[in-house]
Length: 397
Image (cartoon, rainbow, N blue to C red):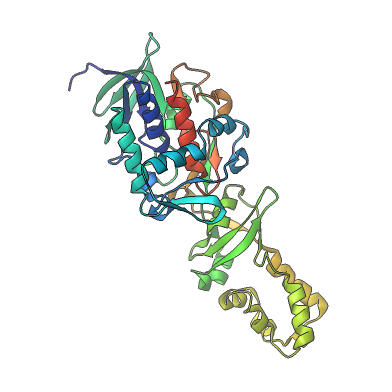
């Protein structure tokens, strides 16, 4: 292998959603672009997302749908390349899609449709994608270009874009490379943690709820920072489902979360009405009308459930209502990066241009996508951040 470097305008590390979008836009401007990725396939996280159907954006996107130490940072990119711009691309390729709850858009067929669209756009503008490429040392030369040593040759470029993603889902080839590059060039990294991730439970709760695996119910899950009204799912390890994944991004170790198991009903009122109408009916019969029987059995003692309503005092009814509308449970932790959909934290936004994503410390160095301290909610928001941040960098690299 020759030691002579391959010279190009732009190198993007990461054939990710943001990396491919950046490559497309830079290629449209006539820039010579090489994308390097150590994985054996481009866009692995795209292919696995949304259960293989890719929740590629959301109809309602605002800065409020993102977590960041600088909550205003994402506004510029999201307003310059919007969800409607990406939907227009999808429509141009005649990719069939549908809307699910809360504005989430999914492919009718397969996530492959989105990846194939991006790869086709890359191909149109002659983007060179090189896979199975291990990145070694990266240095800045006296002429302010970047020099990269890799397992498949050395490279020299004017603009270097880090689109290598976060730490979530290591089996999808996630690595800390991008954070190391950021630190090498003097960037502050906000501490990272797993986001959009299931909760694990303490042993006593795990045993108590073990029989509930597979049950999903619509709930309101809250803490003092946020609340979400969506499904929760009981698993053999703990709690999952959209509302739990959302809450995990706002949860701190040691905290309890509050779960309203009946957000659209007033169980106290129901029990009082039933008590007046049919005092002999048992508590378990009434509760089984509004909640799965297995859940009711796990939350209340059998002796209580077998009581007829006539034996329930006003204070006991209030206590039952409190248990169902304000069920407090303290997670043991989360399942961590292994199953997390995103990484919270990352490259400090205050050291990047919100318009171009360029480093304020090193000219020609850019950070886009998940590696930046911008984390979206569940529901297509992280993909939209990838498209928007990638598009912005692509206008200038």
